[in-house]
Length: 259
Image 1 (cartoon, rainbow, N blue to C red):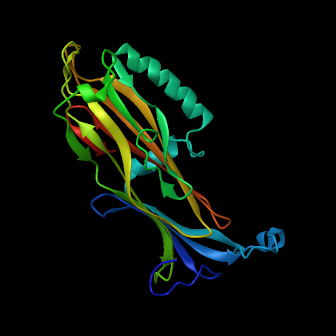
Image 2 (spheres, helix red, strand yellow):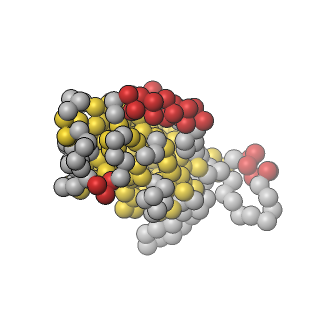
Image 3 (tube, one colour):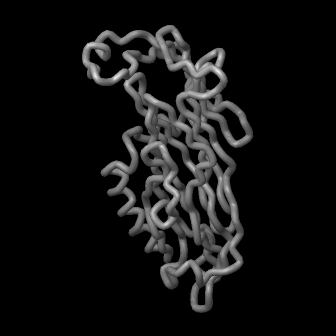
């Protein structure tokens, strides 16, 4: 736990699950009360000191209606499910139809409570199918959405923090193509930056992303690729599990934005 008082969660504590946008505005907040869970206490192994608690939701407030609708529409299974992988395969076909090459349709960017720092396996690119080498493109700009923050902590006095994660879609855009490739602006790198990823026992966290709906919103001779990137953050413990979905957009000429 964090802060001056490092007390672990205990029965009677109130716990908050909270999400804020890059400007610090609260998008969602839920308040839970921690209670003793007799069943968990009976089943836990004697060799562990896992807390025998359960979280009972007392209040839930959605302050961003679009974010609420995303949660209602998107499935909340774990990272990159079989269905998502099948959907990504279809997306690959759709991308090819508009002359785009997407290097990777799904990837994990938080694993075992830590950010995945190898961008070769945790990023993608959207280039012309006629030249898939990002080093051949030039003049790219760096961009990012600004960080969304996901927290689980003690309420109303913050005696402990269980989860503190910040994520933002980032990368390079506005890249001009080499000779022989249709003019336009391409995306040599698209990835999640994780400036904060602090997860305390008994919680664990993972996160994954899937590229969806690629399109050329420019013309065949002046390409402007666009896609949605759907990210899922999964936080689990014996106390409670949380699954939240975030949507972002990447556009060759304009960069990255949250939805």
